[in-house]
Length: 364
Picture 1 (cartoon, one colour):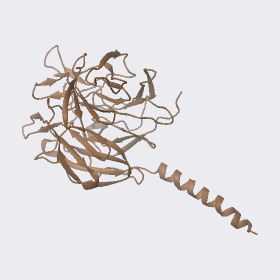
Picture 2 (cartoon, rainbow, N blue to C red):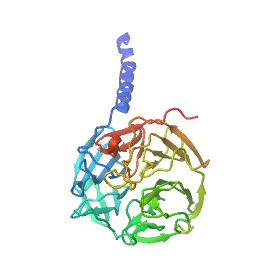
Picture 3 (tube, rainbow, N blue to C red):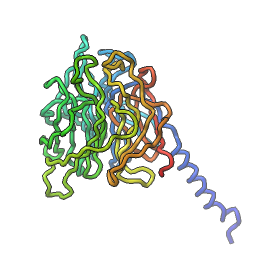
Picture 4 (cartoon, rainbow, N blue to C red):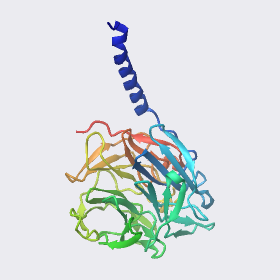
């Protein structure tokens, strides 16, 4: 006959296990090894579990020689970072775009800054293989861009939407589609609205959604760029036989809050809600890499976090006063812990190493 203590052992072990799970879920994510802003970020979901990545960006000095080539990888379960092999190239980049697919991370474009403050967009496509800690070169971007929106479609095609190009001297309307299987590029239906850069968005299912960004001031040179309030949705084919270069664009209603630049955005299900794209932070004052607006005034982050449902095509405010708001982002990661924002600029244009977790809270 088993003793009472023996009977209680399984229950005790179960409670201990659940407590450990809760503790792991509530554990804080460690800050980056170094402060960085305007860094390319993404999350992978391969067989080894989710991993968060940060590539390049600018350090606290916010000068041309503070642009980094660094690569950092974090395991969200442990919350700690590992420094990996730096991104190839003679100089670091700002405003690059990154997206993970299977066991690789694709890093597109961005711009380099010279000693005189000149900004030059690059056409580089670097592919990082985390398990081997190495890079290889993909086929160059046909129209080099920085500050573009990036999204993954059908676990094969990566879309670069809009962005700025020093090749044209302005924002471009191009939708460039990279086939990861064939290492080739296609051109999709251009965006029909005002070409922008520093906009925010993602692809979820068969839908592209992007908002805001900056465009050249049509009234003159002061300020050079102003914020756009345009929000757009692009419908991609639902059939595997459809032409993925044909995108049906339509204008969306304005989102909650002011038009902004460099919002953190990412897509994914969270708390049993599916089909949401999340947006947090950014600033209503488009700015250069030092955090000073093109109008000469310091840019400050917005505290508004909101979301868009691709299924019901509606906006929802998540938090009008998000704690510790940030700006100068290239994306956010949707995880079981919440919306993860890596680095960026805090109030006062301070470059940070913080890893912020925004909790969406109770849904209506």
